[in-house]
Length: 479
Image (cartoon, rainbow, N blue to C red):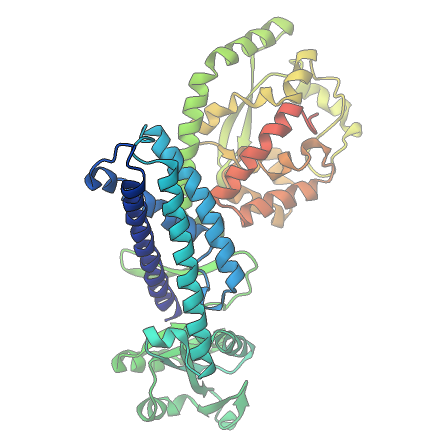
């Protein structure tokens, strides 16, 4: 209903913008050929190979900067800002592409400036025109979307708070071109009452008459869980009538999980999952982790060997510290670090537990007597964590993610804290760029981990990696 029309409108707007970009490309070429006659000008066929790259850059950037999200209710200044951002970044990316391919003689900076300037001006003018058209037709009581799409007449089954919330959503977004014809309730005594400006047209027994005497394109069931077994016959009737059915799936008040429809071999399932379960993003994350860790292990191999020799020569014991940790949903794996403590550190822990500076199941102590001299230096700059690149390469860990806990710590977690295990652990995360060991409140640490999980995206990972660099180089918050 809404989603399909929104997607179609986005495609229309994107196609229009790409046509403008193509026009600006040819304008730039002809100006280059006309006024820069002192420089060699190749055939248009040579330049045409750059057009797909230009289209890709413009389309991606305009989409990324939100040009097509809720376009019809955007302010003009938002349009201009999005275009300026896309223009500046696009100019840099396209210019870099031309420089890498050594095409500076054919595609001059003047030509690139003209292409991007013309495209920016035309896109802004196009969007302003569309916005004014939308406002004009809206004043006449017509939705901009209804010009492109047929109005959808919707019947709502249900009259509770959730139905009222849905009505408010529709009323606040007239650009969706959705018209509510009325509501239906299970209780016959409510027929005729007004809910948010719409009349209750009948009870369940009246639905067939309502459909036959009104234009009903789609029916939205916003019902309590106790009604589910009572609407099956109504849904089958709608199926026979060829009417699209929507069932509101906010039957449970989840704060994090979102609902979506899936199926396994044709068996339909209603799935509730968090943002961290997006398979496309997770696949990209794993490919990125595998590639970066493989390259890092190869490039840093000599440096890792030097660190290993330093650890071996400055204290007794093995070079690597190996420990069982918990990964995704409690999977066990062997965690690697350069050893920074004396060999009997684990057995000596009970003697210094009273000096723990972290509440909860985690032990943190400033100037831990078990840490070797070289270990303090390794910890300060997080060099002891480098062997975990092997854990990332194998898939036990990720570059970015909550730090992997000990099984003994997980046993002591509160229920809400166990959600930390729903994401693959990482070498760095929000807690590390927010103060690392300076955070003495275990619940605050967990809150940062869950904040990362709930807002996770590849872009967030990239920002955390960038913030990690100065934190590590300056040795901030390390213990």
